[in-house]
Image 1: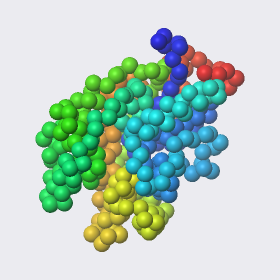
Image 2 (image 1 turned 90 degrees about the horizontal axis):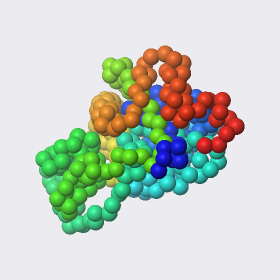
Image 3 (image 1 turned 120 degrees about the vertical axis):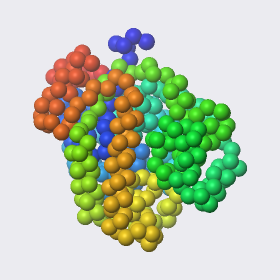
Image 4 (image 1 turned 180 degrees about the vertical axis):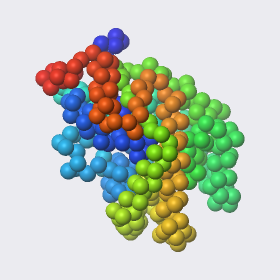
Length: 324
């Protein structure tokens, strides 16, 4: 397909707390875009504070998609994200607007940007049960170490408490003899879109300070009550949603395993480590235009507008009256 015939797709990625939300609103307004959340936990209703979810009154009239679309008991996945985007992107384009994915979940974003094939490699329930038993007997770190032996790349991207994804990665190797990271490396890297990816980065010390401040703000806003409410509504602690940052740490506090101070410090540490893993994932992606978001906001915005205009061969003024 000729590049000119491909639908346009704008993407904004970066680690947590780097400033994606603020920039995304100004970019969307300038380019007549609709935002698709590329966050694996913001899909869940009732999980607002811990995900730093944008409030409806903060959206400035810009349509936001894939936020609050399922209950926390639902095991939302990258494959489902891809399926929903396969419907959303043509719909947004048909309305004469620009599809704009904003988020930090690398696999979700990359699977859409490059049309990954999530082939069903099957399952082995007895193998899964064996891994759950192993984790119970030897601990979460020992389970992750099993994955680290056969697939260090996947082990490096997963949190030690993300038991479901660790076991799935082990299961894929068990069933196919190839690792999850090998399967991802073989995926098509040619995009079905006319693609423009903007990546936000920041000095690590500054980013870590922002992360710590965000966690403190979440606690003040009522994160503990949010997690307690989810548990009281029957959301199991082993649900996919409850492995999200801010939820698994507060669960440990509510279960009496940690003091609140310990849980907060654990959350800050886990979030810093997550940001590092996000950056590691993004740096393996191609076609990214990197912007240092710690610099002047308005200068960065103008630089981004220039990148988009050059990539899509249009001016901002063009977008207000023309379709994509």
